[in-house]
Amino acid sequence: MCIITLSSSIHSQEQQDWQQLAETQFVKLLQSAPNRNLDKIRIQLWTVSPGQTVTTAFGHTALRIFEGEDYGDKDFYLDFGVYDPSPGFLWRFLKGEAAFFVNIIPTNSAYQTWDASGRGVTATELQVTNAQKAKLLAAMLKSYNSYKDGYFYENFTQNCVTFIRDILSEGLEKRMELTEIDSEKNTWRARVLPYSTSIFWLNIEETLLFDHDTDSVRDPNELIYLPDDLLKALQESGVKVENTTIIPDRWPPRDGRSSAIWMVMYLIMIGFALPFPFLQMFERVSEVIYGIVSVVGGLAATLVFFLTSFSFMDQTLAWLVFSPLDYYFLKAYSSWRNKKVIHIIILLRIFMLVTALLLNLFVYDQVLANILFLSFFVHICYAWKRKEELKLFLLPGSK
Image (cartoon, rainbow, N blue to C red; front, side):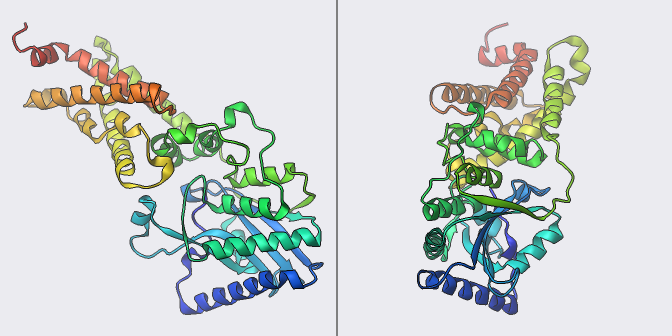
């Protein structure tokens, strides 16, 4: 879930040389581990608190490996998620074809960056034997060699957490798992919800873009793709650890406001769509709000469905529920000169919604209840108010 990391702004030759030096020294340390005394080597898991934007909302995870004095020349920071921010990155990312890389920099630089961001950092030091340290360093070297030339980011299976989860599992010879899981929080989407309800745009993303695979029950290892969950799994693993707050979190607590905003909009669209005479003076409010939501959301969901290669977006039904075709809500019915066009769109949209319902019930069990009901309700109410015109359109000879 964490795609923006510390080196994404590195452009100058001087900065590239500085990072290359740190990377070279770190790789030498990993390669020499089997033949050296590891008494002074220390390994920490860093857990960074969530930020205030969509790309920072889930927090971040990294490893710190150091020897000697803190923040000296043998103090390294390792994470995953650095990318090439050249023109076209956003398009490549949306298609699921943007390359990401292993990131190795001096820990001092990482500390300064996180401190400047105001986000907190918890250091969890692994109290392990030298033999375990050797295995952990070997797992880091293996991961580095596997992904140094790049990898494709995946929201739930290849992000900053999952790579480090696998390093810890291999190095400690103990599969990282969430051992205490609420049965209502055993899917990827369920783990996201506390974060998505705190940021409006993230809530939109979770609602529109995640597909049915996101709603499948996952095993205790697969569920670990968020920084806080990896920390929890490590603490539950039985490995002796020591937690220290390196940097306090200076951002205020985030309340789950985005879901409340959605509920207000939802009730407005439902309430003013009802086919009662005294509500007709407000029906355009419902139609315009729904039209904007469906056109924008439908455009995003349709582009994602047809253009991206992200596995968690391959089979979303949201593009059938919300659609750019709903632009007809933005124009008053009375202002349409060619009513045939609007009648065809109404019928096509109802067909799309029925298709989404059937697929949801019998093929793809995806969490769509609220938006599916909303779209059905608004369309049926809209059609009901124009039932006589629709009847003449379907049965030209009827009266």
